[in-house]
Length: 105
Image 1: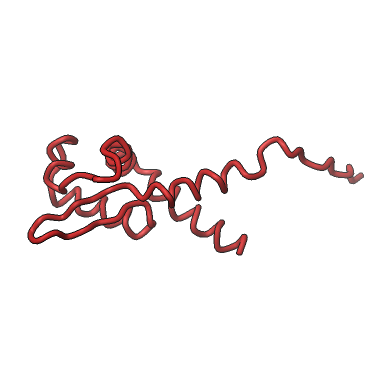
Image 2 (image 1 turned 90 degrees about the vertical axis):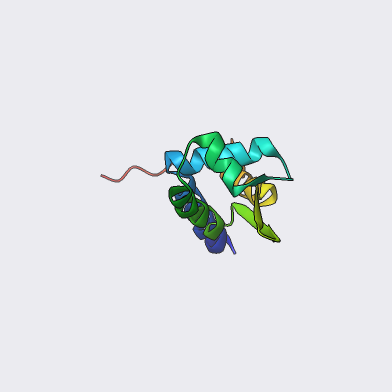
């Protein structure tokens, strides 16, 4: 279980480790649960659709966004539950202390 959470977290953080994907994700967080149309994301970030598609695929594969096709439109939103899970994992050991290591000579 801990290993799965560590692997998930590494994948999610790697996806967010690219400046363009981080900009996309932060925009989607601001948009809230309704999300944005793919074309609107591209317009807000002045990003070509082909480039955006690549970044959205990485975020989707990392579980950080969800996409919902309604007719011909694709709505994209941040998966806030997944982001909370990631943040909880990162902060779960906060301030618990680290045992001292015995010095080896």
